Image 1 (tube, rainbow, N blue to C red):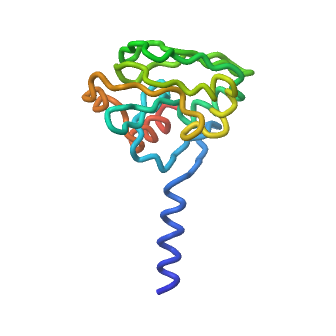
Image 2: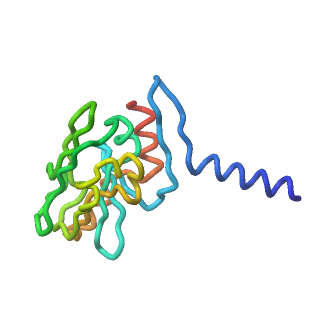
Length: 156
C-alpha cells in the first residue's frame, strides 16, 4: 500500500514539471493549468477579469539572459495580438504582444528595473503587466497548457 502511494506521488511529480529534449531544444511543461498561451509564447492567467501577462519558460530560455524590458504604460489600451513592449537579451531582442484586448492596469516595475527576474521566475515574479480584459471571450482562441506543450513539440 505504501509503495503504490509512493508510485502515485512520483508519477504526478514527473508529469507536473518536466523538461524533455527534442531536436536539441527544450520543451517545457509547467503546473500552470490556468495559464493560456499564444503561438508567440506569451501567457495570460485571469483572476476577476484581470489578466496577468508574461512570457513562457520556453521563450525566456530561448532569449537567454534578459537585460532590458520595455512594458506598456498603465492606462494604455491594447488590442489582441498588438505589439505592446519589448525585451532584449544578450542574444536577441523580441517584441511582446498582448494575448488579449483591454486596458493596462499595472506593469511590473520590478521587471523593468531588474529584467533578469524574467529568467529567474517567468511565471511568478517575472510577470510583465496586468490588463483589465475588454473581451474575455478572446481567451477561447488561446492554447491551454496541454495544447501549448503539443505546439512546442510539433514546432520546436
